[in-house]
Length: 117
Image (spheres, helix red, strand yellow):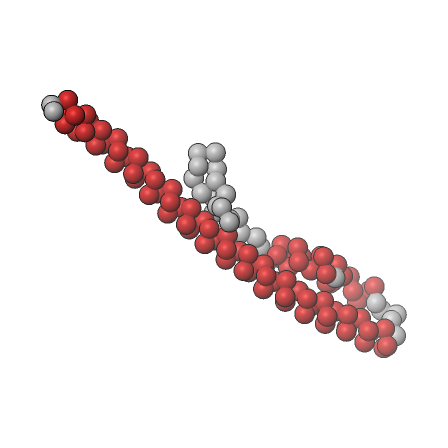
């Protein structure tokens, strides 16, 4: 995975997301009813459901949470890889800049040695 760079070639650190953004981004694809903006609406939405319906919904939500846990673990792995990639890119960027600076500083000396041979 190559690090993202800005136009100047400097690696860009991955933008952090809030917990709600991460949760909703994952849960929205699994069970939209469990997104943070939908949870407060459930009491009214399901006020007339039967005990059997409530049990079935609970089972559906439990499965959704299991799937969320799997997806969240994958998300964490991806974030870890992005951070590692940023770290490596930043190190390479700093090393390259230092090398360029060193070459510029040595250039006058190298040319003076070359002219006296």
